[in-house]
Image (cartoon, rainbow, N blue to C red; front, side, top):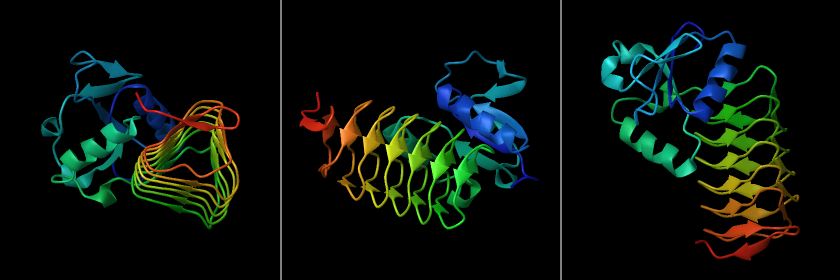
Length: 212
């Protein structure tokens, strides 16, 4: 990976965080791609140019990529669009140099482990999942594909978090709890019982609320 240029798809906040992680590893970032044109043409971020589509790149097969879109559903949708041109193995995990990741853990393609994050023994971070700044995923826990832990979230051991679920900022989940797919756990909440697919839960202890 170190000898292949990195292209970061997404130039909003999460893109900047992923760039910081890549730079902490000494990686060369060729450019950002901002498909929704939130940044003006010819713009740069700390000297890194911003392009607006894959078509602007040459030698795509020789590059690595980071899918730096913070919203879980948008990230999955973006990968679905990109998968006809790019293979999963062109999206290596990116782990900030300050993160602590157990040698016995497993990181899926495209996973991002950001500044100060912790991934414990035998934990599994799925494909394109995010463990954000100062978040932690303890031993034997599973964060499924396209899911995310927001900054400061704490997940105890033996927890399962399903696909596309979000654990909010500074929220915590007790040991052994099962969290289904497409779940949203509100910021500062404490989850101590199982949450079904599609649930929205918040509070201390967290209780179920209807998605609006």
